[in-house]
Length: 602
Image (cartoon, rainbow, N blue to C red; front, side, top):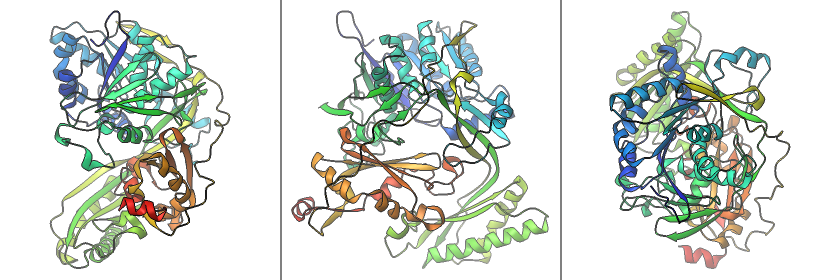
């Protein structure tokens, strides 16, 4: 164990998964080299909740992350027990009790003595009619409450996890909790933090935000990817957490990856809107003045998070049946491959419509061709010339499985009756489409529970107060005029960049590599200019609305780009529905700098 009598108590937490399908190598690595107190797992996102909801609809005992049993924890239970580690995971999906029961059976079969607790209260499916009657509308795009619900969950906080640990749980399973709660819960328990310790709760939330995305903070998806050694053995992150809220981010010795000011800065701003007002169930966080210190190789100390009283609402997510989608991937080779692909797509969509009419079925609700390899994602900033190898991603949506299946069969006609250079289809999928609806629900309408040793306990809610206003807003733009120069350099010369999806929108952060570069970013990267750069993603070809937020502690500007990810991660037809590459599109944005600096950077 990491803590000993007579020395400062330091809790070492390893972040083992960032998603439902993360690496099978993380847990063995962390068990071998982590010297941990806790092992935590994040499995849930809006997309995975839809998957689990459909799983349980097909089989009532399902609806949880089976990988938890078969890959990540089940095979390592003996070692986890030997090391006396605690485990916290939101692997319960829509059926935490079901996973807990399966885990307890596995523990008994192995002859181990580990206590399992599970957290519930987030599932709102039994209250859908009342929620619809209440008139809830989507908090981002103002759509009406949907029909055909697949899952419905409130995002609970960390105190139910802490309550389970206080009762002696060795393994805590939750359903939908805030992602960072898998880390904040253990810290509340270990350090005795209260609901009124707002700065500490914000600091623990930040530690959770850094650890719950796995190797993203230890060199994964980093702008300077060439500087990150040994992807094959990339180190999963460890947080050395202190009672004062500070955390040192590191990784196991001898592993690949990189923990640096850059990697940690990028992860802090990943999937964040206003860094000064990051709202979770237990606290309202201000990360805008967070400070980072490189203590040594692969060791970064994080301090300076601040907290305000929690709001009186939980964020809630509904996934719903949005019909059926066919996706087909057609390789097209040769001169003007993009032109041939576009024409072929239009012809195949027309043929599909003819067959729908013959079968007395309604039209497709959506058709789209995404040309992979043609730089369509870059819009007006694509490198001219075009490739001679294109993968044409054909997407059609239809209310019925039959209609989607008709197109799946007909699209094969392209290989013999249309474009020269069309080769064998790489893949064709007909799948149910899941929509996402996000709203706020009063905390007083939700009761979190924790069950351990067969007894269920209500967990008091951090009720908070109405979310009236934001903290004082500091402009992300400088009042300093642009340098007296017409010399520009690519943004990537001056900044690290990270992007991520936020429902129907995305965020993209530009983080100055040196403090003196920030003023140049502020002068050139205006919301108007950023919107124009992403114009090809906006509604009807118009620049999307862009908000800019300051994060002076990190020497960064965070942009929120609205109406640019239609359908969100579940339903977007874009090549990059997770917005992982939106920052890559910004790397060549021209930043005006003094000629002397431009010369140094070339």
